[in-house]
Image 1 (tube, rainbow, N blue to C red):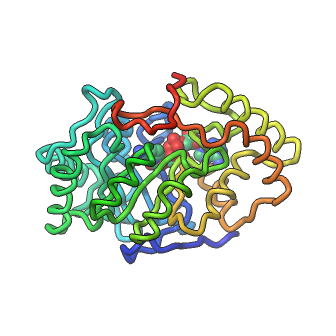
Image 2: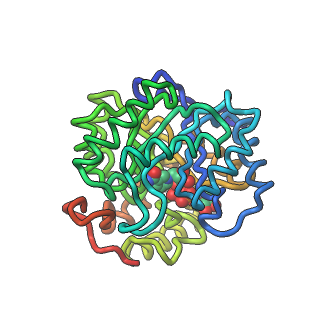
Length: 324
Ligand code: NAD
């Protein structure tokens, strides 16, 4: 049975498992789950050495936090618990509130749902949906006050738009950054855009969506996936190719993402013991270099394609129109 590997989360002093538990599926984000199996998956993950759990009020519109809180009853001291603030819905107009007032209420609501009196990591959820002035002068300062008050241990930001995560990291005191869909087989732009500032300021890096939101799985991407069709097509080709070589594409994708030495933890969404087991199989495994090189050559024409997320003023300069 492979041993878990741990890495330092920036300068927080926290040692986190390189495989982190993404709890969004616990909120039925991707279809109904069996809640009892979700709880078993959390317990099994802890037993096998996973100690990083990521959730948000947005996932299942509070359901994921409630279920994770139930699962962690009696286990709180064994885990590093991260949640978020500012995102509560899907739409730009109605789904977000980054005000000081909402931050203060939100943390109390999350603590209640998670059945705890402190959070390890408290993050602004999807900063590209916010406005710079408010984020820098209202949202983050309120979060720093909560840190001072001992409600949260560390403050971070999350999002898709790498250039914006970088810009905030340059001017604000951030302990951790969660970036998604920017370090996996399809897209490695995290390395070019965010890594230099993160390393220079010793900010803990959390990489989510190592399966590129299911492009890199046997079942393939959901209909709502925002990447252009050509990305999905290549996803199918490499899934077929890996299968013909006797490997599930998701396994190669996990092996690849988990190897990054400067990413503290890689988050993948899980709600079943079987999924935890599958992803644990990739911990500490070096991808077959020949297969990896072949797959990367197939991906090259569609590598690093970013899509538009958030407010128009926050779109990355190179981002394309969303497909869905
Ligand atoms: P996800 O939560 O979007 O879901 C991953 C899906 O892949 C799930 O449906 C799961 O059933 C499936 N899966 C898991 N392991 C698999 C495997 N080995 N083979 C095939 N399918 C598998 O996952 P994600 O996009 O990887 O995101 C991970 C987590 O990161 C989220 O749950 C969330 O906690 C966090 N996240 C945060 C942000 C943000 O803060 N802005 C954005 C994206 C993700």
